[in-house]
Length: 213
Image 1: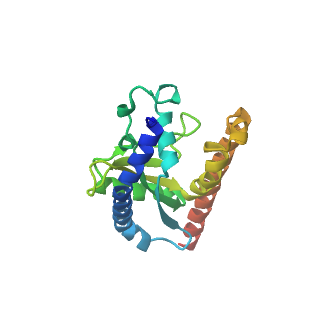
Image 2: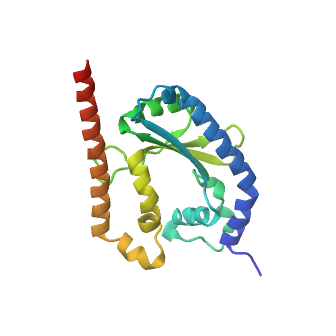
Image 3: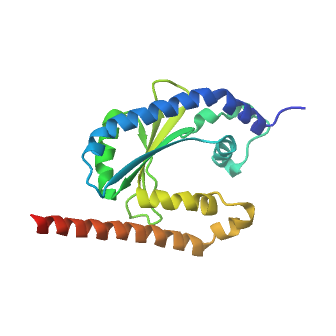
């Protein structure tokens, strides 16, 4: 029995997995080294945390499928498809609080990875700044496996951890809820409130430091 495209991609995933692990370890180490001066200079209320992850097999296959016309693979041309076209088999997320730390982290990482391609996560509202900064490229240990790092406001990132399974990749019985206009609107409201919370906090911190001076 001939293997399906999905089966071929699953086999490729486990063939690539040792290389993916090397990539994520290198990227995490490089990111930690780059932002070490920032970590040493944080105020007590500021936080920077680093999370690394390897994309799971089925998630990788689904991600590649979604990029195809009609979100389906051409069964007659399985050779067209490879997981090495994905930008995020290996990934690192840098969570920062407050979000005013994002430019500092962004600057040092852009200097370290100047050839990496920017791909910011857009806001739900077109004219608003991106929800997160994102870049992808190759590490020195591999010329096949692309990696990605994200710089994300911490409150947004923590909300995404909940939103990911409930809305972004919901179980079949929740797909109707996830696609509803009302839920998209509520999601945007949550993100706006988190951003407003951070702005208010930073404004008050600034006033407090001015009073101390």
